[in-house]
Length: 248
Image (cartoon, rainbow, N blue to C red):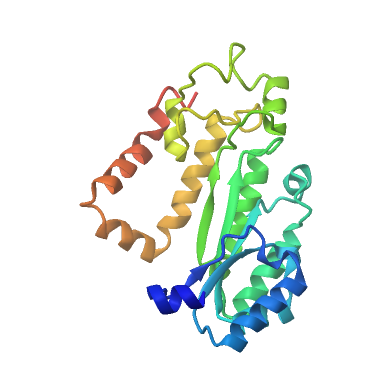
């Protein structure tokens, strides 16, 4: 950090460790070293809701941490348990309340379409997001769980018939409807009986309605209307339900 600051003019850092707060002794040593050396630069890192408390967060703040990322994934206890996330809705809410009270910015990731998830579960997560909007600086995540070889998701998809009967990883795959959810068309996503294309579109548009209530988001889009990338994205959003009969 010192070398990047002094030799290359770095103004801040983002730790790419998937869970900086996994070990309390590591966090304490890291923050103490940053403070003792007078690094004095802002930084961001990823945490889990059940690995932080007021003591650790205050120490991290004193060492320059101002932004933390949470992989919440869902606010449905049923979905969290099925994912083996070992977190509860209550723990996520408590962590967001703590970081907000201490002045941290937060990015929180929510994903939709997990094994066994229903539209009711997804709406529970959307309600949680609305209830905690002032504690969440930025939302991240996705709709539609990607299927990859050798995973539990692939096994489930094959067992329940969620993949085409002739599907093979050695054959080309193309699903144009994926683009609406920012997933490459070449990657299969989990389309299951209780959470199919229709449910995914419902969740996507509810997300957009939530964003539309934020004046800063609307202003940002208006400023970028001349940008070709923004126009293409807007086109995908408007045409989404009509791609490949997605509403069926």
